[in-house]
Image (tube, helix red, strand yellow):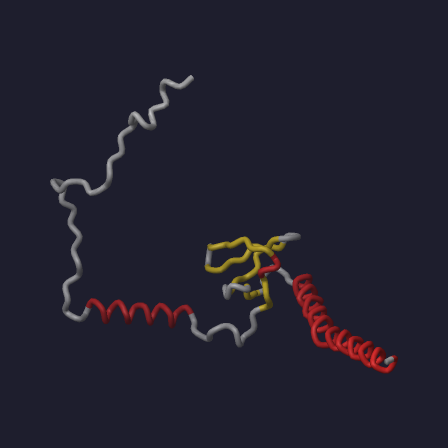
Length: 146
């Protein structure tokens, strides 16, 4: 009977040790590495957010970071949203000139097909399709309330 109690106790202790080494310890190391990376961030670093957005750090506060996600477009996020620094492997090798050339080629292909460009004309005599709302109705007239 005592042998059965010791084997149960040893089994429970082995499960606790396995839980620690397989789950708790690696999680703690990941948290420490993330905290270290967050402390070492500096303005000008290119980072990746958990949502998949890339941005360049403009400024860092104690809880928030300001990212520039496009020229002149800044976004304020929690520092916790920053997953890691962006690496060369994360960023596409397409330059802005190549993107502009691709967009120009698409536009040329669309309008050179011989189809006329769509024309939008405003008809001043056409009735308005926007709804009209009365300024006061018996249900919402509150002018007599005191």
